[in-house]
Image (spheres, protein in one colour):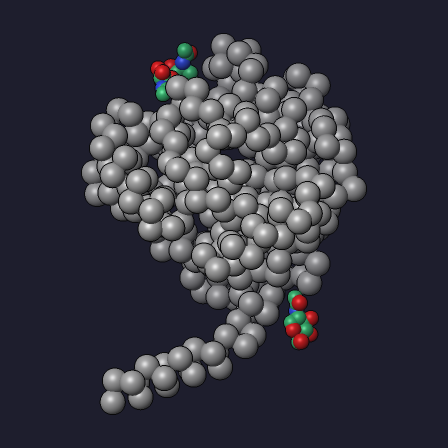
Length: 321
Ligand SMILES: *[C@@H]1O[C@H](CO)[C@@H](O)[C@H](O)[C@H]1NC(C)=O
Ligand SMILES: *[C@@H]1O[C@H](CO)[C@@H](O)[C@H](O)[C@H]1NC(C)=O
Ligand SMILES: *[C@@H]1O[C@H](CO)[C@@H](O)[C@H](O)[C@H]1NC(C)=O
């Protein structure tokens, strides 16, 4: 770990402003599988096979498990976020790390996705974060909500991970609590191609459902199609409500025909926070710490944590005394 960090950090810090608008990836399958095709800077591998948002110790265990059993499919989860949201990212990291293990049939890698980092302070802090956690994907774009970041994400991923393609690519947000094992279970029996899955909703008379931006999955061929479809850019069709546009591209291109809505297992948390469901795949609108705490409580993430913390602080204070 320290070796990788020390290699990665200065490299990143030395990148001039313009070049930071590039892609920084710590690949999950070793750097040999990931080509740097002009997209950007690659940090050395941390060999974070398996479920990648986890403590160092867990990483070692899951790497061994991954070597023993080849997963049936691999899913990349991109959490779109912005550089300044450090506290939220910390909470979301906990949310992913403290979940039940993903079943062995799936390999899930989670990455936080930014556009280029302009602020000099954020550049340093994000570089450290990337070195420490190995879960940051930096895209070649300027930070925006409705100005092409989703398109940039889906079109960068097939190139960045060309050497080790995933079966599925997911986009989600930092106010969504995704239950990874439940999502894996949903994906397992589904087709591996031409898939578009999420929280479906109808738009106008269009018979094909669109997927809400809280989180949706496409198969690798669909992401590749987005990344190579120049029509989307030629029609300047990347500006606006991005997740709606995403559905529009697929409908025009007749892609994503294997379309699945996971409603009601994907939903928005309501104002009173009383609509959690035990079979949740993803719950959205977790926009402040109070709502994150409610989610952790509901899904029993905090069960048993309190006693452990108490013991530790006891140990600490007696050591100080
Ligand atoms: C980043 O995007 C800009 C504008 O689209 C492009 O000119 C530039 O070549 C890209 N840089 C990399 C490293 O791909
Ligand atoms: C694309 O759309 C954006 C936002 O509507 C606009 O600012 C930009 O000038 C357009 N670009 C082209 C090439 O039409
Ligand atoms: C949390 O634990 C309680 C008590 O064991 C159980 O009844 C409940 O179903 C659990 N909730 C979830 C979402 O698993």
